[in-house]
Length: 280
Image (cartoon, rainbow, N blue to C red):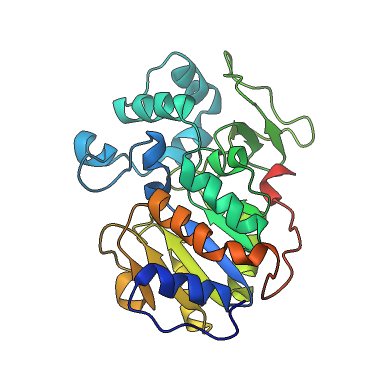
């Protein structure tokens, strides 16, 4: 059992030691987490927006102006090419070894909560329990008025959903659209987790999408250590305490192997389950 942080020049060992000796570890994942599952990123080389151009930023306004028309367009596949490509990739995707390793880190008590910017639901499929999906989940619907969520599973709507049975509000996919505020319950839970964090691990995120990315700077201002796992330099790199230049899958599997000692002697705060507000 480790009793004090180790001194090493290896970034993975530094990260493992920092996680091991942190009281409450929160992970934030971005698009780079899911690229190994065949889901394309948005920015950078090969990204959807790089190839197709940036999308319009008024998607939520278009939905609110004409919910039925929006659904009819979606159902008839009259969508932008990048949305069709993303949808097809999401349907085919399965968790990769990194997702399973992250669930393993939670199981051994090394990770206490995960905030994901991804909408693919792969963290849940891999077995993660303590999860906030800050941008929603593609397999759910949500009322934009009262926030009630309904599970779709693999079902794809073939006609516009009826108004919300509880309040009469318009129903959309749970995923957050451009111009749409993060649902209040989700943002509050993400902020609560960040405020408890003594260490934040940012995996595969460009740290440029707000308000999610702003949580990383809040954590740093609160005194939390920051570990970045990303093959590329990002806006987060200058404030990171440890930088691991690696893919998510490789780094997470290595961290799990380094931290398996926690299975019998977990350190830090007890990993009490916290409700996934998006599954309510």
